[in-house]
Length: 112
Image (tube, rainbow, N blue to C red; front, side, top):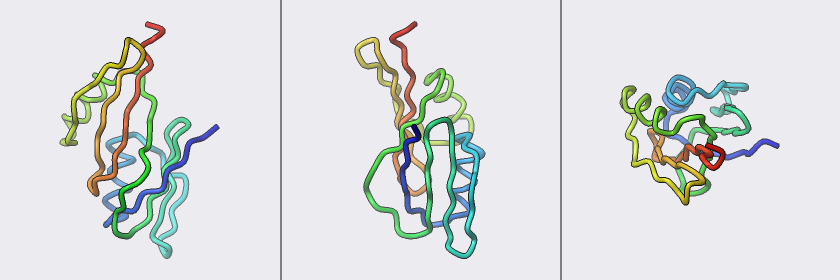
């Protein structure tokens, strides 16, 4: 089952580039007249629409290795927070898109 989040972004072109080139999402739909796009990565679907960003939901994206993703994103100039480990179960990393929308990368480490 897919998880879906809507974000508002100031510049639809910049946001599309950020999600596809830096976070590895695939754009599955783009409406140039309506100024919105749908993107997917695994079970996470994000729709972005041009407008003033609002505080709201958090997109959670499963990754194989949070620490490696943190280094890769730092190398791409993304402002990356601190990797947090929760009770030998999960590693989490918060990042923010250019408009301040929060995205949480999650690695399941319980099985390791």
